Amino acid sequence: MNAPVDPTHTAAWAKLTEIASAYTPDFRRDFADDPQRAERYSRRAADLFVDLSKDYLNEDILAALLELAEETGVAARRDAMYAGEHINVTEDRAVLHTALRRPATDELTVDGQDVVADVHDILQRVYDLARRVRSGEWTGASGKPIRTVVNIGIGGSDLGPGMAYEALKPYVKDGLECRFISNIDPADAGEKLRGVDPETTLFIIVSKTFTTLETLTNARACRSWLLSGLAERGVETKGAVSKHFVAVSTNLEKVAEFGIDPANAYGFWNWVGGRYSVDSAVGTSLAIAIGPENFADFLGGFRAIDEHFAQAPAAQNVPLLMGLLNVWYANFFGAATHAVLPYSQYLHRFPAYLQQLTMESNGKRVRWDGSDVTTGTGEVFWGEVGTNGQHAFYQLIHQGTQLIPADFIAFATPHHPLVDEDGTDQHELFLGNFFAQTKALAFGKTAEEVRAEGTPETIVTARVFPGNKPTTSIMAPELTPSVLGQLIALYEHITFVQGAVWGIDSYDQWGVELGKQMAKDLGPAISGDTDALAAQDSSTAGLIGYYRANRK
Ligand code: G6Q
Image (cartoon, rainbow, N blue to C red; front, side, top):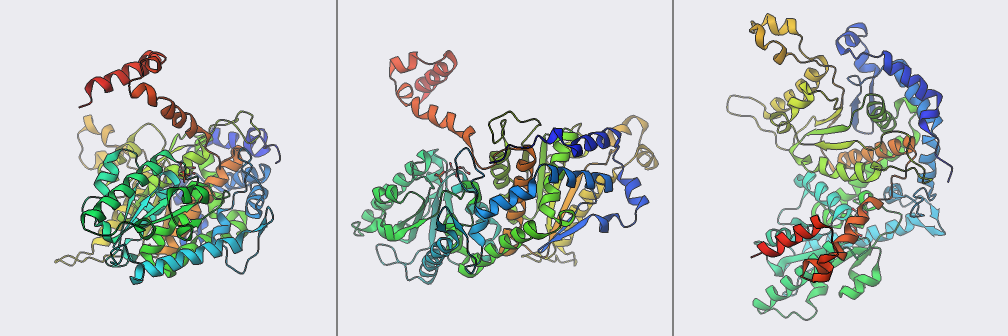
């Protein structure tokens, strides 16, 4: 792997530094000076319409950002990723989530293995399972069809399918529902199993490693729940596990150890990172819920953006431009956070999903050669659906002292068209808020405008909106499986671009290890081993002591 280019030593960085020091954003001026601004800075990628005109962008900035991408070798790294080179250096792995959505006719041999053939082999098995569950052919131990699919997994083995299931609810087959158990807090399984009938429940244990404490613990708890529930109903429990449990994992040996029939195990590969895996067998619960045809459309959406990212010229390349803009805001304007604000109730888990995708990928302090990063990295991604966010935290985006670039996402056609009795179209009211917020953030409201409304002088400043807050608007015709795939792939590639510029390995996650290890090591101290307790620092010992004294 080539040594990373230090972005701060490029000519483009020097240019951007100079531009930034002289730059005072003024969207009122920009739009007045250039009636074509919206058109000039709007782009299309598959079904996505992306308006960058309310970003801190002009021709000089655009040119310098594209030069930065050139100088840091973003395109070459993208090609290396698509080709299966081991760009995840700290784990010595290829990074091939793009192979998960290639058509069966493609060929890609990586490390001596035809990965596209492998992908389609598993995909067909997942589709077959989905068809059998959906048709009622797959039955539980008492012969009843499945009504509830419970996905047990955490992190990348939970957030993707959970988010996508919520996003695609209108496509879920009537009479089927999915639930997602992730937290080791027993309250999670306890609540998710409430009201569920063991006779009609299929558990999918999703764990790449099949060693994850939370998932294995929850899987065992669910197995006991199932067996005792069936026994209470007088159902024969011998062989029941194979009718109520399937597994998704790269570790098929451990799956067999758990007692799951290898015929009910769906593999994936170590070149799929957990947070990039919703489009592998990790999405089995989703495939069952929405059906193989919709799942294939979902994959097609990813593929359309993969192709756009690989082929669109740099100045038209949406993931490239959005990734570069994020670098621009983070490194030249001190933006520590980035808001993602979907105007769709169905996307209510999308910000949480993106938090893992972006922050686990780019929250790094060393580069892929082990040297320190030379820039800030990894903004905090956060957000909430509109209009709920408007009534909660938009205050800070409009009038706070920090710069928060925000992505607004909306769809032209709703899944629930509602017109109330006086003829008001509720989706139009909703979208009115989307249009208004990006407009208000860009153009603000001056003191003169506030005064002109007759506002008492003492509260004029409090009512001024400075404007010039950068936003990117993303619109699509409708939130379909394909469009959801497109949105996910868009953010995957934005994350890639930022990591490539910063010179970091976006595909490892060593930062999650220390706490996991310590949690295991603390077991004896927590359960009362006095020597183990005495070996702790005073704070940890005090906290454990509090727990031991207060647990009922
Ligand atoms: C994602 C991470 C992490 C992982 C979970 C679950 O990129 O690697 O979130 O998905 O720790 O791991 P398993 O799938 O191995 O249980």
